[in-house]
Amino acid sequence: MSELEKLREKQQRRRQKRTLRIILISPVIALAFVAAFSLMTRIESVLVLNSTPYSAGEIGSTFSFSVGDSIFSVNRDKLSREIPVSCPYVKQAEVSYRLPNRIQVTLTPAIPVLALRTEREVLLLDEDFKVLEKLDRLPEGYLYVDGIELESYEVGKILDEDENVEVSVVRDLLNELRKRGLYEATSVINLSKQYNISMQIYDVITVYLGNSEDFSTKINALIKVLNENDLTVPAEIRVRNPSEVRYSRLP
Image (cartoon, rainbow, N blue to C red):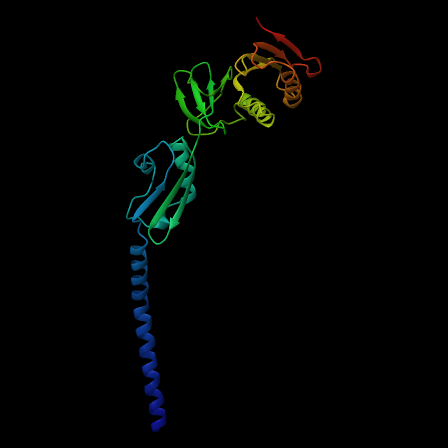
């Protein structure tokens, strides 16, 4: 064997040894990297940006993770869905990673606006018809919905309109009242008489709407009558037939 061939063989053995060392040490490096990354991304703290009635401790009790867990073990979408159910006065929860080791939870409060009375209890709802709380008496300061029957509900969840048909009737009426600027003037909506829905506006005027058909035309007719009369005088207005509106002053 020539000296050149011996040199080439020696170099080849060296390359093989280097390759073998790399193969042997690569898993160690990979494991070390994974361990270091895992250590670096363990949750160190949770920042809760909170303007709801709940304390940070109450919000934290809904978390399915703990400080020290991997930040990537937190299912953000699932947690965003769970918090508003466990804490009904949270309208929305936004969960985000703040790498390398912090979780941020931003909460939007749910504002109660409706008090809905069934045969058995009073429910406090937000504008999305989410059930915030069950009460034993009618609270003051909210738009009051009476005479509605619910097939099912769950505190912390929005009322299902497929199961609770009358909810969609109330929603449609409220949408019309908002569009025509009468929402703030309305204090009571009564559905106890299915074909003669009524509401109280300006505290002294009772409006009879008939059934739930064509709220838009009925509210338009109502607006015309209101523009022609004193809103501080007790009265009844019947707009069941928008073409034959009847206005009656009360004693």
